Amino acid sequence: MAKLRTAMDAAFWDLNISTPQALDGISRAVPGEPIPLDGTRASRALRIQQLSLLGNGFPLGIIPSYSPSANHKELGSFALQSLLGKVAFRNWWLGLIGQFRPKKLISSISAEIRGADEWEIPLIKDVAKHFLDKSLYAVGLCSQISLTSSSSLLLSTEKHGERKGRHTRAMLLHRLPDHDITLEAAWPELFIDHKGKYWEVPESVSLDCSSLVSESGLRYRFGIHRNSGPPQSVDSSNSNTPLTLLPGACAKAAFSYEKNKDLWRQKETKEDVIIETDKGQFWRPSYDIRLREPHAAVSGIIGGTCAAWFGGGKHLLAVESMEDGDSISSGAKSRSRFGADLFGSACYTFQHGKFRKLLGDLTRIDARLDISSASTLAKKVSNLFRSASNNGAQNLLSSVGLNLIFQQQVAGPIVFRVDSKFSLDSSSRGPQLEDLVYSLNYSLRLLRSGKVVAWYSPKRKEGMIELRLFEF
Image (cartoon, rainbow, N blue to C red; front, side):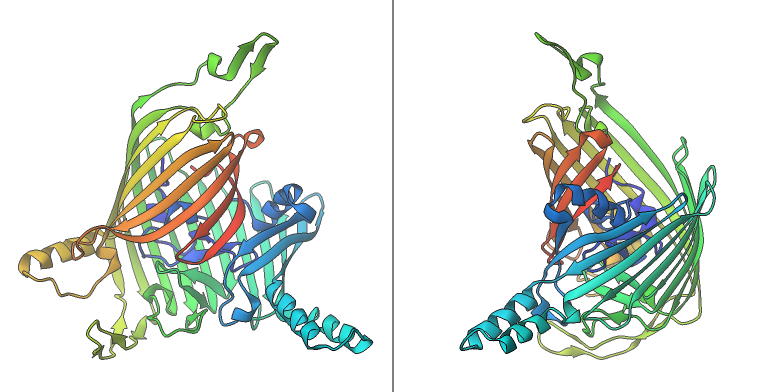
């Protein structure tokens, strides 16, 4: 199934989105915005753990990534990451990540050589100086300490040579039989909005309690979050700041009920796993245990949220340009002190093939309809009926979103995947493509449901390689 639980997680501040902009590989989705693509959700494994395993399959343990460096175009988008070192003891470990952007170095050295008449000692010294340019490098330190059998502390910090300051994160996780309790703080926290734009909040602190999914399908979570300091756009543009990132404290609670039903399913049999040949019996499991049974199914989730804000919340809107060239006057926009809403998603899944054979054994389609805000959608429908021409302000939350996931086996464990999101806004003439992510997935049979994912987002102009485990 597509990740229905994202519908509730998107209302909170800890929904991890994959990004090569940070050495830890994560940014946070702006809470309250439309549900992001499944393919953009970050891996459950820490980035340093991913690099440790991925390094075994890459030359010299170097992993490539692709992301533009904001306000530093001379650095280029191509970067190389590697695990520089790791030490582990009984109940804690420490690791060091390094990153190098080669474009500026190559360009600078080429310019030096072209401008020199002959090779001399001064030329060699000038070339060597370019290797000391700190803007080429980034370094990150990460450590995890097991306090008890059910509690752990994660500490990380990273410094990019071309940026001011460093990013620091601390997270305390305590697992209960039916709940997870998380205390987390970041200075600053990196967020990404639905337009693919990055924001930094100087200080972000949250305390969250989340229930595990029960057999009945009921799930709930509640927590307190606090933002301190004015959010800053990473690319220094003058876009409107998302209201949920403004300074203030928020207490939020949410619940959801999830249900799924198979229309048909071909169960795995002993003959599927054990193959009889002239040379004897061979064990042939599926490349991914989550994709081993052809089926068609429907699923759905419905839930609600309520939030109370304390302090801050007033924002001056930037001057925007209208289509005819005129401008809209600036004004103040503030978030409401209290809010409650409903959300829901419905999904249809069809899978052909058992993902065991070398070719043509997997085709899968997931179609998910998302309603992020039932109240905003109801208001817009009401306005549409009251007015022949709906000229009200556009609000992306009022759109009904359609997420489509297509997966096709290429050969053996390699699968090509496309994640796409369409807006079904009543004011538009048809579905509008909002986001698109391409990926190649290499399933690791030994991990049962693990895969190496190489993805690219045309909208964000970013791509990276990740190790993902049990992504369904």
